[in-house]
Image (cartoon, helix red, strand yellow):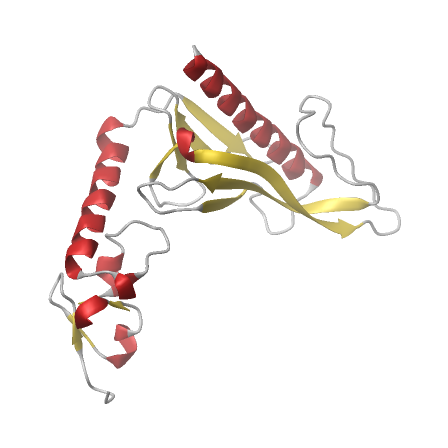
Length: 210
């Protein structure tokens, strides 16, 4: 392929040169999907090289239906916040439908609580330096892991594993600490935020059993 060779997107018809073409995907059968049209697909790890044009169109329809769900059907019943002052949006929950949305970015996808089969708090740590002190009270949320002795937490994430779902997303790793290196206040907020999520899951599962 020469420097000025182009690919034409099978969906929007726009042409992309060699450089911009690298941001798209080649489909089965030789068709091409440009980077902008890729944004119309679901966010999962799709194997475009094995997908036909019709396969991609079907996936785009699923993505469009999920977007419509977010704007016309979703009704937030609870907002989970994080941060040292609990002022940072983290998750939005629609308990009536059993849905949730990640508010740590602007993706706007709607996920099902029923698709969650594992969730947990994961944190990174650093050794305490001389004179440093770090302590997080976890007595109010005993289900969460405590900070090991002799270290401070520098970052915390909520890890969510999902069963097969319409979006094709298998795992979410959501940063529960807003800053690059969290201070003690942010870690307290992260623990409280995670505790709120655990409570949402408990309440939702209990309600489903009734």
